[in-house]
Image (cartoon, rainbow, N blue to C red; front, side, top):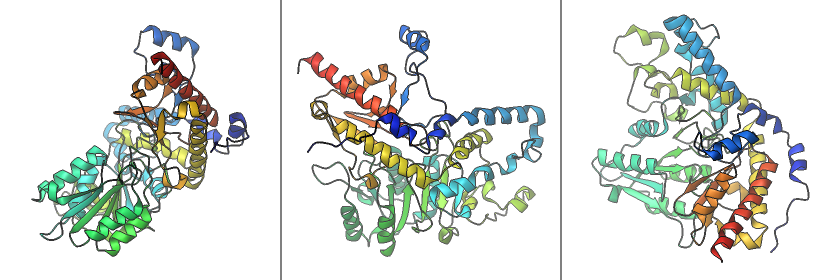
Length: 446
């Protein structure tokens, strides 16, 4: 069946976009971003001063323009005030409470109470800390259900936790694969695995959005079903936070972790975050001094008294520079809502899907393995290339100033971020992808 393209031009779609003003808040890399400094390619593109088409926010989000100023301010405060800035800060961001500058907006983005969120650490470290609190295996109930082909760091963490508690991962881990011939998981299959293993399962840990396929899992339904079977439920939201609407409190999720350098645009290796439902905040945990109640934290009495809520799971004082990098992005988020961003994301990704599917001559060389239902995916399409052409196509896109990413052996992931990507960029990318495929195929004589 022929794909129906929108009647409006990309320029008309951009003109009608109520969120188009947000793009101006970000630094867009030039087309020479991938060229080694000093090479002819770098010099040639630099002269053109052309911006890249950046479709890689699922890996690293773009830098908000305000972030540079915030970091420079903190460096100047450090230079001018030294240790006094912990309490007396000329920009009214005392370092002793620096995480409070980001917690409220972060809670809005994940659909949580303020007290249920803490900004701290990094993704896998936070996952280990929360598994230490929530994974409490017994001889009869010790298994952990994860998706097959989970992000490797999640798999390593779960595997090592099972070893740590004296169980063999070969026995303790239940990895849920797609049905034969499919790339994504059916929710009914996940629920069936939960039901079949409910008596022996201690924990479920899934990703909110699957990094490889871009599939958005039914967080609410899976959480409710597992909890009805007495199973603790955790989520890795690295590819979901800032990407899709979340209501962690209402969904009664036990705990969740995320990074902030993808759709949250906090910079490489940016600070992470955790969610602990208010009904679970009394869990025993590994402790550190930053989780101690503020009123007596500096009494240094070695008698731990946890801050109520997720903040009581903190360990060390957070990096001020990493936190203000996140603040720079969250100030952009505060100018809109996740509902509005998600609506634009669905339209952008749907527009790209229609464009990519519209040319039968080139679309036969790849398969979109991301769910076609827009409500079952995030801001990403994963293209599985055939006939071994992925690397050549990727190289042509890169040389054209189009920044996407690849996953071996044959997948290119494309992520149109609603904060800064445009319909014109999606249109131009689609044309260039078609040209790249034809160039590779014609060059091979196919």
